[in-house]
Length: 391
Ligand SMILES: Cc1cc2nc3c(=O)[nH]c(=O)nc-3n(C[C@H](O)[C@H](O)[C@H](O)COP(=O)(O)OP(=O)(O)OC[C@H]3O[C@@H](n4cnc5c(N)ncnc54)[C@H](O)[C@@H]3O)c2cc1C
Image 1 (cartoon, rainbow, N blue to C red):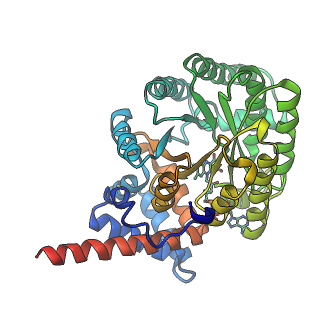
Image 2: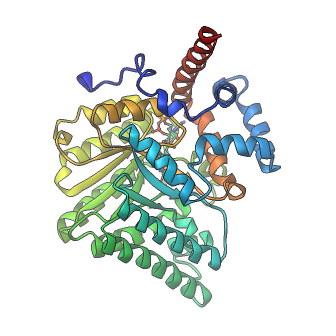
Image 3: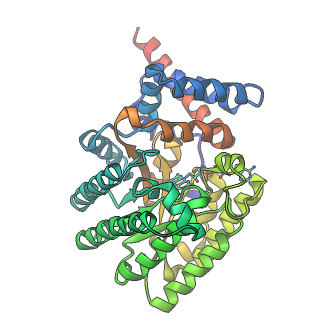
């Protein structure tokens, strides 16, 4: 990449194949929805209307958003999209993105789905990681109680044992198949318990390769403490620490649930940004101990990562979400950077929580979506021009 800076203006020719998965009408709709959600005046009303329409199970809107953000309804569909992305040298991280369910059968089924994904990842060289969501492996209430260490007896202990068994089943299979597993970070009130499982399991499974990667959210002031702790643990236990660095997707939920929220959150976007860049620099200086995955659509962050001298010729990944800033993913991959798309999949009728989060993000990560919309507008104009030329 020239001077390791992203240059957006000449991308359209290169990433035509990524946008080509959208019909012109989908592009129009994506453009329009993003316009409403990123404009200061229309943002909050549009957010309310879209959320309400989604919660009322509007088939049209759910179908449209699924087409943009979901990689497929089942493994076969998602596999097809993995192949399309791989033609652009973009790798895929598969995420069984069904959330908000709360029973033991669902949790056991999520384990079985993850084992199947591990099989797939071990056969397909284009899938470097498989993702697990802690809330799909156990009840939020049990994690929450464990994090606070209160009322932890009786049925809670059994449920906790089952949760630990689920993680161990996944990680031991991943180790057997040499597949890396990434643990997503979710709400702060479950994170202490999740981080503890992740770190204990890293000590057990990451001896010879970084099987487990945990996620650090830079919108938390405590993110640096967590990274520093993992660094010491990696040194003391001689393990390879997998870390995914994100800004954090639950800001609104944390703000609306202050009584449950754990830790302190930056209130200014610039502070979250600086913290993200601090984490990048920390990892870069100590790269001998880390296997990093930098998840972001932010161009400044990507430039910061690419300009870190210590990261040159070292192993790291950069990832974006499916359906967001495809232009950045294309350019990174085109320039030889190991680039992934996070590809969520699962039955359409269960995709609502994931879609709601993406819609919230449209309204929070305004810069990202304003820039994306410029590219979409160019794509629409280029398609219309093309059509007129052929008439
Ligand atoms: C591959 C991938 C995997 C991901 N996995 C996870 C995960 O496991 N867990 C998770 O929580 N998120 C995850 N995310 C989402 C991520 O945390 C961000 O929400 C999203 O990527 C937008 O941030 P950005 O870095 O792209 O940049 P930007 O668009 O520049 O940043 C937007 C982010 O900045 C922060 N922010 C915005 N306003 C404020 C404010 N006023 N005060 C403080 N902070 C603010 C928020 O975190 C917001 O999401 C993932 C993202 C990607 C690309």
